[in-house]
Structures are given as C-alpha cells and as structure tokens.
Image 1 (tube, rainbow, N blue to C red):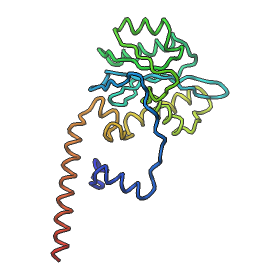
Image 2: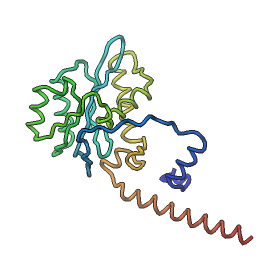
Image 3: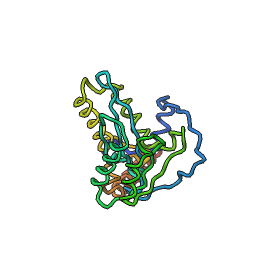
Image 4: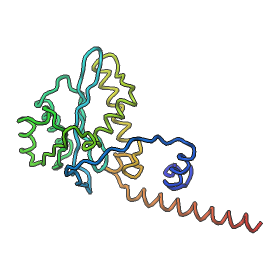
Length: 228
C-alpha cells in the first residue's frame, strides 16, 4: 500500500490494526535446532535451500524439486520430475547453477536419499560448493524451502490439474506469483525478484520518505484541529 500510494503507515501500525481486528493467525513457534545453521547470507546466491515435494496428479505422484535463495527467497530453479532419483536431482542442480553463472552457493537439504548420493556429491565437488545437511527430523532447519512448499499446497488446494502438462503450468503460475508478486515479510515486504535482481535500497528510501511526509501532514492536521 505504501509503494502504491494507497496509505502511508508503518509496519507496526498495520500489525497493531490487524491484531486489534483479530485478523492475525497464531502459529505455533518451532523449537530452535541445536545444529549449526546460523549462516546469514548477505547477498543473493550465497545459500540455496532445496527440497522435494510430492505432487499427486491423475492417480500418480510427481516430484517438485526447488532451489530457493536464502537471501531473497527467490526460486532460482524448479522442475516437476517424473521420477525421483539422485541423477534427476543432480541434473536439476546443474540447471540451477547454469541459470546463475558464477554462483557458488551453499546447498542446504535434508537427509533424503535423492540428496545423499554419489551423483549429487559429484556435482557439488565439480562446482566447488558446500554441502549442508540439516538435522534429521527437523524440517524447520530447511524452513525457507518448506515455506515455499506450503504455499504451493495452500494456493493450489492440492489440485494441480488432470495431467502432467497441466500440473507444470499450475506450478509455473505459482512460481511466477511467488517470485514477482507476493510481498514477503521476512525480507522487508519486498518481492523476491526485487531483492534478487533489483534495487531494494531505493524503494526503502522512497518508503521512508513517504512515511516521514505522512507523519508531518498528520502532525500539521492535528495541530490545526486543536487550534480550531
């Protein structure tokens, strides 16, 4: 709303208003993992999170593999696989790296056999990457990509069409919205595309200027009302 000049209020004011109206869902907080996952990327393509999500279409499973950038939440690459294997996942990692020339991200994943195999290790070694395995049975450690998977299920209501091509189109539509439209609270209410490729600093300055101007106008208005 601030970017589109609808209203100029701070994030805390929006939160307080939604809270008073009972429009905030209360989610159970996860317990912190004792593992070492405290690396905080300072730029895009320093750390990618990857996972497999099962997609049920026309009485069979397909497998959505995604690579999500930890800094921007941008979905760097995804593919709806017809088979799940170490070879298939390693091919998609190669494709993700090819789309970001020169990137050498840390690759965070769980202990699934499709990630813990010789084929994927060979790709990681060939590109001089760092392999990070999360704590067993602790999905919060890979929460960035789990959040994306949850969005896919929620927005699609777990229905992806009647065939593989329809499912591909549906997933691509969700990826485009997630990358280019949805504002993410975790990254300062930006679209992942803006944080990954754009100039978020300029938008932050514009937002700050609008808020400052709105506060000044409200102060002047309140003073005029008191004087009257």
